Length: 268
Image (cartoon, rainbow, N blue to C red; front, top):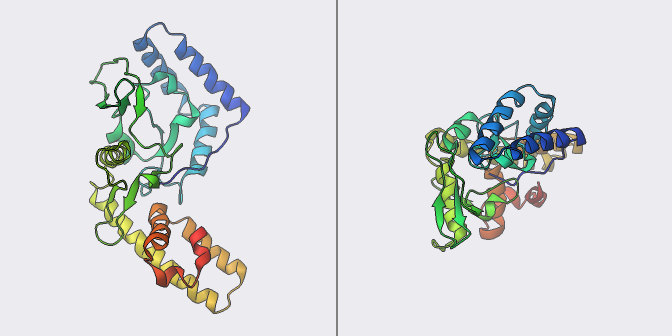
């Protein structure tokens, strides 16, 4: 996971989302708000002009070739509500609450959500029971939000052995550690063998591409040729693997053979 670049919607799309929001807000009970949000969503999100634009913008925000913003592996084809609409119906039509995800991530995540309670900062899972619509308690989200935060401030990817994500903070009692742990668990970032294997493969691909770039640059290839190679690296799946390679070089001096000859690659 990486922090996603922001994209702006047209004034038309913003106005339409506000209209949908107002219809939800006008409902008199919390359950009615949930029902209305789902009704409008089901009718509007498939072929509606506003959501066609939203899908285009979300695609532009994806890493690689429209990869899922959570796992960065499978193609992204579902609009994901970061804060579930069944819990937060007033965020159902909030542009900042959307990202593009794959069904493999979006399905199991579903309505799973947790907060640190405003009253005492305690961790609380607020996933609603099936068919129920309890009003959520006030609190701050536990799940890392790549629309607003840099996931690599919380997560560390082990490129030496397991290719698993682990919490970056050392203090297991800290909110940052708990957020990392919860995000890894809810999105099943380490539980899918194929996903972990794909990260390992991506690492090998980045390594090979960088070595080829070094050879081509040293042989005097044109800037146009080199730029195409850079674009190939930047559109590879599992961009977090590359971001982690850059970070681990800076922090620990790993991957010196890849970055010492081409220090500009640290800024790609």
